[in-house]
Image (cartoon, rainbow, N blue to C red; front, side, top):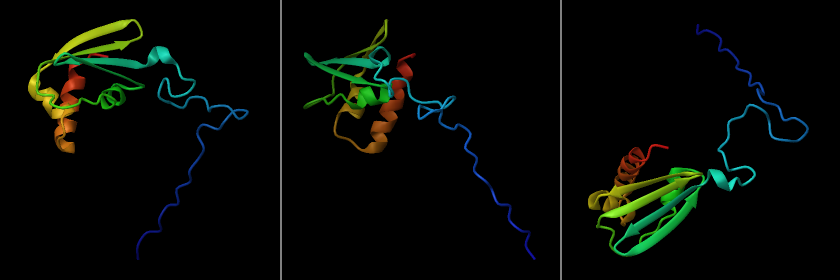
Amino acid sequence: MPRPKKIKTISNKFPPIDGKLPTGVPFRVGAVGGNRASLYKLTLKSLGRVYKSEGATLKEALAGIKVMGNAKAVSVLIVEKGDRRIEKVIYPLMAHRYFSNGGPTMKTYALNKITELIPF
């Protein structure tokens, strides 16, 4: 005869206080209240063209850059967040893997490599 299963009860760990946001709940900075100082601002310079994007996270900001045509060239990626500014060179193969029309696996690999370059 099998053991009786334990019934798990779900407790509300973070109850709302007077209809406001619950306290102690982690949430993405900038998602509530629209804090523009915490946004990532990206600028990609490739083949004489300039592409700009903003996002609450680095991945959202990178997803906002849409390169028209060929992306297989040395590109410069400028990342700004608050008062910090970083410029990184993206090599042609990585730029082609992320910004061109490729499969999702190739884009995920390139996204991980690009985010490793940026120490935010």
